[in-house]
Length: 254
Image 1 (tube, rainbow, N blue to C red):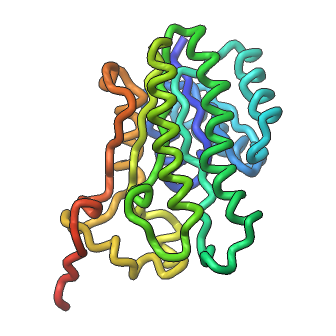
Image 2: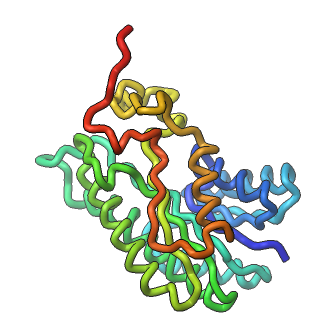
């Protein structure tokens, strides 16, 4: 039987790109989304396109019973998760420090840290039965470099990196590897539509002269999920065109 991957936020943008990469490599797909209908349709499309088994799930954020139910269903179908990709996130946009409600702040923390913990724990239990596996966080370079009015998001991404390292330590004895990909700006539909003026952000000006597309992130995630990184755990791979290394962006003269 082919290996199986579970991907959160798998129906659009980076998550869909990751799902396509794993489908091309012959993985069975289990796809999570906030919208059950969209998840089911995406799974159907990828199954037809790549000839792999695929199933979509509508997911309830920060609900451990829902997480347990999903992983039980996967097992009842006769599958077991080999790779977990934690891609979904609450972006926490426009959360001004002095005015953001504690409820909105904690929604970001609960999604990006607490919910990922729940998912990783259930996946790890299946991986232990398989003799090992891989958990990949799709994190962000904002874990190290803060941006305005995104305090909960930056805090959550920093916290998720700490959790990744702790999980790598705790799960290594079960041959479960835990790593993180740190993208910078990505050419998502938000970027294409210039949501929150993101196309004019200074992070667009990278040393390589371009920002990441979905394939760039998918390839990095796949590396951590494959045997190519079989002796790598607790590691970070930054995919941001070199944005993190520069003291300030060099803006080309027009």
